[in-house]
Every structure is written in structure tokens, then in C-alpha cells.
Image (cartoon, rainbow, N blue to C red):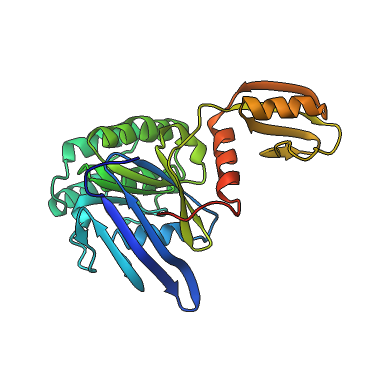
Length: 297
């Protein structure tokens, strides 16, 4: 995606280590207004660390980070312009959610208590029940509202469906997230269940080997799902499946690739159908994790 506007986020040659463990190395990437970026990577690859760096909760060992043209310096001055939903939100155990939202409204410029109450209702969050030990889902619901009710220009969502029931997950992804995008937010989301947001993504970032690789578009609409039983070893030139269970295999193919697979005559009961977001994301991960994937520029 190209734009004549300045980047909402600019990360330049950022590295971060914890003791002898280097988590991120020489990361350089930009995010523009209106992008919805999927941040993909295995557990422990640095996704959460990157979010904390961008939200000015951690200081990079090397490199610089700018949010909306402001260089991060540890003061937290940009946090009022950003929203961060951590993977494990923590809240005061003796307060009600309503009290937490009122406190948030006093601290954060442009935080709309009316919007926060409306979103909480849509998520099914009881605002007047005291929490002694909130569930993961309850904390995630309140985390959504606290992170986003001021309509920040940059939104960082770390496991945003963690613990949510179906109704709350549907409301968060198909009401709250589109409302943020309509308001002009740039959203970066890391989620183990990325298929839930696959069709909303405009760009993909992959954390690999402590740095970032990017692909400029989300889910491809030119491929379809093929499946069948493999009866013989696949010959050279035939695409590898994106998923297999014993002899049963699933491919994500374009017309040319499907023709090669059909002509090989090694798949029994070969069928084709529209690809699901889960299939698309599996194929994309496979491509990005190949040795030929390019670092972010």
C-alpha cells in the first residue's frame, strides 16, 4: 500500500535483547494510515516485545521508533494517541469496570465514556460487578474498551480474542474493529486465530529470525481449495499441500497449479471449492516462512 502521507508508525533499525537473549534485530518497518496489519509469528518470536516498544513501555537497545511523527523517548507522551490491548490485561481487583472506565476518562484525552459504555454493553460486560479475580474473557472485554474508546490513531491488539465467547468475539471483530477503521485508525493485530480477521487484513508482517518480513496484501482471492487422497509420492513440480492428515491433503492453488496437480494423477477424489480464510492464512504462512521471504523494507 502506498500513500503520500507520513507514516503513522516508523520503526528504524530497532533491536532489543533481554540479557543474552536477543528478541528483535535490526527491525525496520512502516505503517500508513488505514492499514490493518496482521502480525504473525511463532510463540516467543518478539510480537509482544514489538508492541511494548511501540507503546513506549520498553526502550530499544538500538534504533528509533516514531509514532505520528513523535520520536519515542520513554516519557509516554504518545500513549494518548495510541491504543494497546495487551495479551493479558490487568485491572484493579476491587474496582468495578465502570469505576475503571471513569478513571480512564479522566486520564486519557478524548476518551468517550458514552462510547465506552456502549461498547461494553455490546461485548456483554457487566459494568457494575466488582471483580475479585476476573476471568480472562472479562479482562479482555474491558481491555478492548480501555484501549480504544478514545479512537486512537494507532491501535495495537495483542491476542484480542483471548477468552472471549462467540458473541463478544463477533462484536469486537465485526463492530468495534470496523468502527476504529472508519475513524481512520491504523491497526496492528497479533492473534493465534488469525483466520478470524484474515479477510480484514490489508497487509501482513511476519516476525522471523528476530526481524520482520512483509507481504503487501492480505488474503488472495485468486486461489481456491483443492483436496483429495494422495495415492503416490508427489512428482517434482507439483505444489506441496498446505495441510495433510495421513494421505488426505489440502492445497491452496491457482488455475495453473490445479492443472499440474490434476495431470499428475496421484490424487484420488480431487475436489475444488472456495478457499476459507484459514486455508488462505496457512498458505501465506508457508510462503512467508520459506527461505526466499524478503525482509521488510
